[in-house]
Length: 521
Ligand code: FE
Ligand code: CA
Figure (cartoon, rainbow, N blue to C red):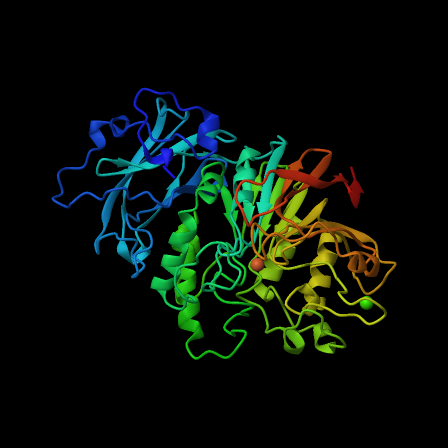
């Protein structure tokens, strides 16, 4: 398939719509202006280095992170993406229009081999609540353009359209849901983890996964490169700024701090390689640059006075899973040990303080694993997934208490389980009379586990009265935050085993201001 995104379109106007859908983008290298042409460095210019697209993220009222990564041969075995073993100069520009007539800032930076030839530009000095377009250039090659926007000014109550997703395993399905998200033209996107899976090819895959299970930095870099060549994923990144957090598969299945699921001698080194590759491939700020095998990923972003996004890291600081890390664990008392934590003490304190100080209309927790209690065994016996918050009950109850006492409208967003769910969060789930203190929206996967089925888990809905909705199909969740209500659309696709499925809304819930209950619409 030809890729119009990287073909200069001399003289033709680029429309917002074609841009958002990952279509026409580059309008010719000359638009960068001769002042920015670097002196003949003697280096051979790279041919077609922007194969991985562009991205933006972590929006502030006056700035945003712009990202790209040079990879003229994205699937090179050594993980270098075919870029040379030296730094490559890269120019960037950001404009108020998609044709780059009103460029507001330009600059130059280096794509260095020690960062996988990624580029992270932290632009400041932009206008709040404004739309921008950006692109990169190296040699005579110009990247596709991306659209982004800044957060609104502090105090703004302007409505927000935000889509969130998780779990995009390359082998089991096409990334059509990413394109459908882009077509919704959201102001912001959240990725709640499992952006990339460490696994090699598996039986039943509909797309060929390169390489075996990822262990080394070269492995992780190469796998991200394969994912990022996907046109649907590139369209989603080029449409809006993202707030990202990882879950387990960006490193390895169900890891907990420095403990892998199964014993593995060099896990700390493997984790450090995975963190490095994650940073390189995401539009993150330098404050998230991995250091000494650790990475600062939990962070807070404000969207005017409307919403505070508390982005959580539920992997790096957690105690090992209780009672052997199962999905339907029965009779596990370790789950209730008050010393056990999913967030770690520092992150819990940061979150509780952040909720108390927020003042936002909506406090949104962007995180990975099921927050509400869910009994996954039919009948009187209870079975719990100890990788989720059900394995860390005291930690959850302390946070739910903080939600109920200090935040106006707490909303928890979740990924991980490859199905859509919706729930009302109780202050404590061990008292059936306990009042709801917040709402939880769980998104299905982009592609993990393949097509899914049209049904719902009726048994789980019966067992768990606070759980109001389930659907198995692939998709994402679209939200509309307003002054008086939150609307949540569960978007599903009939198939991902072939490209091209449309997205439809399987269910809509409305949450009213100061009333943490799910109203079907
Ligand atoms: Fe997943
Ligand atoms: Ca049960």
